[in-house]
Amino acid sequence: MKVLYYATVLILICLTNLYSQTYQGAYDYMFLTKQVDAQSEAMGQGHVAMYGSSYSAFYNPASSAFNSGLNTEISHLEPNEAYYNNKAYFDSYSASYNFGKYGAASFNEVLYNQNKADYTYQTKAPYNKLTYTPKSKFFVFNYSCMITDDFSAGLNVDYFWCDKGYTEYSAAQLDLGLMKKFHSKSSTASHNFYLGLSCSNITNTKLSSSENLPSYYNTSDYQQILPSIMRVGGSYEFEPDIKIADFSLLKTIFALDYKDVLNYKYGTAIQLGTEFTFVEILKIRAGFYSQSLNTDISSGAKEKINEFTYGFGINIPISKFYDFSMPVSLQFDFARIAQPRYYDSYLTFYSDQSIYNVFGVKYSVYSLRLNIGL
Image (cartoon, rainbow, N blue to C red):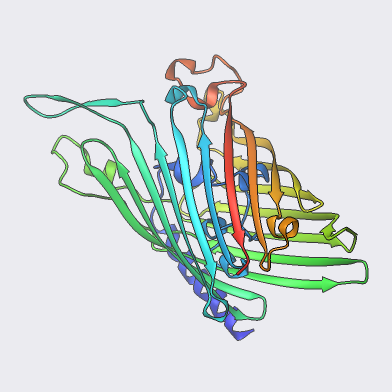
């Protein structure tokens, strides 16, 4: 318990430092509005007390210690948004491996590309016009280990990079996380409870330019603080001891997350999610989240958004079909999410082409996951 106490105190000390500077909303699409995998999107965008995916360290650095064997995953998100002319996309890649008593490690990369939505900016005299395609990348290097039985701690080293055409910006930051499992088994079912706590960007990192900006640029506008996000939550797994052949009939997961952007007045969210797995193959997911917004309410904008989410997954337990000596599974996940709207009226501020004014617009997330239980 002393280890748990000191680890919690360390995180709390880090949290107190995060109120000293203010996040201004820079690159929120990389940190706050879109998720890196279809499972999280479908389950109300929460994931702090869940594991199994190699993307889980993105939400809680301590979660990878609960993964088994080798996990690899790729994900593709198509934000069908009017502002980006339906051409922008996210691609994510991840891999994790559990080394047993030596801990676990994972790697995540998230790429955002506006594709052919080129922007033109004007340089100083002789005022040549240059065209560029905005791109952003986010890399997460993770290590976690079991401190005591069913209690893990983890650390992420992150690197953010973006191309603004006239210059490039980058920043490195640290994330910390804790995760605890409680297990109970009766004669008829298995019960698992997980508690998770994580805080990203405990260093309160500020973006820095790769070169000196021209004098006509306001340097402070381009050296912004990145968000410091605290996530705390729990999940409950229930699996009745009922089998069909060698397959478990049912498994359910219920998750509740609270998210707070510590260096920002907005972005606070409650996230709920559930997943039902039938015969270890079909996964049905649903969720809900409510998040506060940085908008001008007097202009007709919403004070917060309340959105339902849903999706499904198909898991193929290859080793059970072909009698492999080690567990191997391949899983496809899909989520179809309504684009959140900041305004209630279709016509409100439509002239600015805000992506949040468009009714009926949805975006899709596809993920493919391979697990080898070495």
